[in-house]
Image (spheres, rainbow, N blue to C red):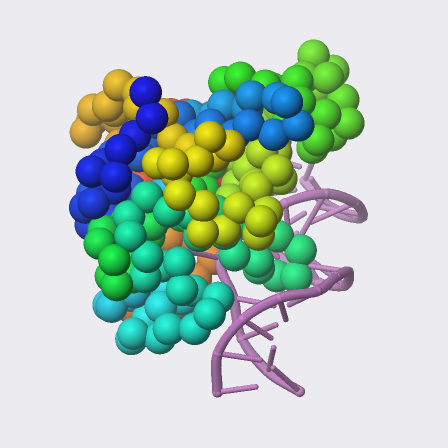
Length: 204
DNA sequence: TCACTGATACTCT
DNA sequence: GAGTATCAGTGAA
């Protein structure tokens, strides 16, 4: 079942944990691609130097962050890559959750084709994980681009998140976030969450 | 398996 | 013009 607006109407930290184990669904080119969310990061604009919206900054690029919960925010980074975020909270509150890694469930053949031009059976274990164990990798695997920016995950039929059994607290690991060394004290916030012992997590 | 580094283009100052 | 919420390739063990 597709998650409702209600699910997203909470703060980013809670949503980050709640999203673990849920299933990201992408329909593209007549294919159905599904992946279990295994790693997330919270970004809270008001207090977080690592957030694009820190200190109330508001530009056209980050405008989706201020939108209502449940819309997508896809941004371009390092000249080559996309990252996919889910917006949390209410309108005009800049909170979001970065999806860092997924575990492919359905459409693996197609994702493998996109990423390596080979069938999954031809890949080594390492290559198989490499399909989606990182924020930009999962975007490539699922063909998420800037065209999917500002998409409503509750209304859309091409990009949404399905409900799945909750992950127990015991299996959620909190950790420091990644790739934000410039953010001073904010880089030490334990705002990254991942599913314990899941091989698809980008970094332990 | 791990550490290091270049690629690359979009956004804000 | 500078900086960036990253990745793939390389080389050494």
